[in-house]
Amino acid sequence: MTRLVAIVVGVLLATALRAADVEPPFDDPGLNQRYWGLIREIRCPLCMNESIADSKADVAADLRREVHRLLAEGKSDEEVKDFMSSRYGDFILYRPRVAPVTYALWAGPFVLLVVGSLVFWRIVRSRRDQPLGEDEPG
Amino acid sequence: MWRYAIPLVVLAVIAALFYRGLELNPSYVPSALIGKPMPEFVLPTVADSETTLGSRDIAGKVALLNVWGTWCIECRHEHGFLLQLAKSGMPIYGLNLRDERPAALGWLATLGNPYVASASDVDGTVAVDWGVTAAPETFLIGRDGKILFKHISPLTAEVWRRDFVPLIKAQCGASEPGCPQLAAVRAP
Image (cartoon, rainbow over all chains, first blue to last red; front, side, top):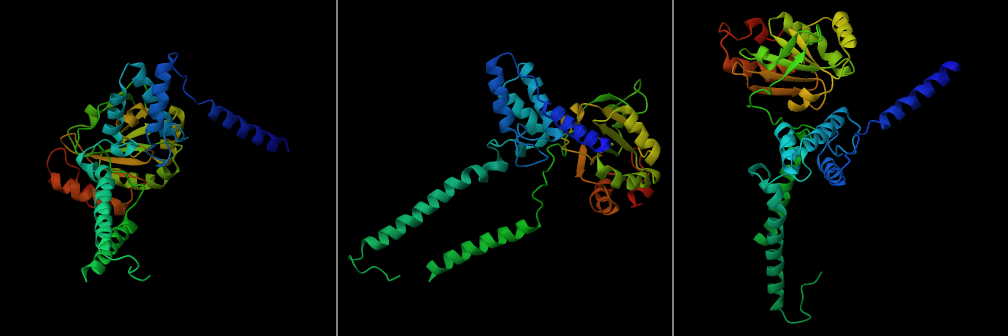
């Protein structure tokens, strides 16, 4: 029984310590805002669909610390993103930059929009010439 | 006629893409560092906090850098293979990630030490420079100090034969300086 209590206390203590693993925010509110903005935009490379702000993975904690360090050194947001993507690739940015690798990603929706509009326009035009009430059945 | 063909063609293209997607690993993220010089570092070694291991010690030969930690269960799985590989003449350097020195030393004493030396990266700073997500990861470093390949997850004989050996053979004759011995290139 004592052993059980000890285990439960241990587990609770461990989670409490875990929760305390949050970097001290900056004194400057502007820097804080940039810090939070950046860590929400950087994807955790291990857990894929979490930002490093949300993730509990060790690597996410390391990356938060690096963001913190770079901002403290006076680096710009762009420089922080460059730091991350030069190590972990474009994948790590939730908003990947425009590069040959990501052309399809960025242009794709607009290409589809244009194609869709053309199809729509053709259909509308072909039906405009039909008299009312003589639409194709179905 | 071809107004019926268009949707079929679109369907065929999508089906082909999805079929291809079935075989892709969605959690595979290619390393941004392949083909680039290895990131520089100098860290104290696990064996002795007074001596250091750095990128300069690794440069100049074909070598592996293996990221490990005593908290890493998969590392235990690959450890036997690393021992075999080291025995066959492949130089393996370790990057010991987020470990206390006594724990790391205990691991090497119990399981055996396949490493020429292991650098102790206690807070993961060097690992971030190398784009490491988690242990185990293994980098193949060429004679020119560039990163040739990175394997995430435990290293196995199959992976070694399939991914590492052709790359080593491509840049090395067996008896050239800086090249691993033939036994290492043949799968152990």
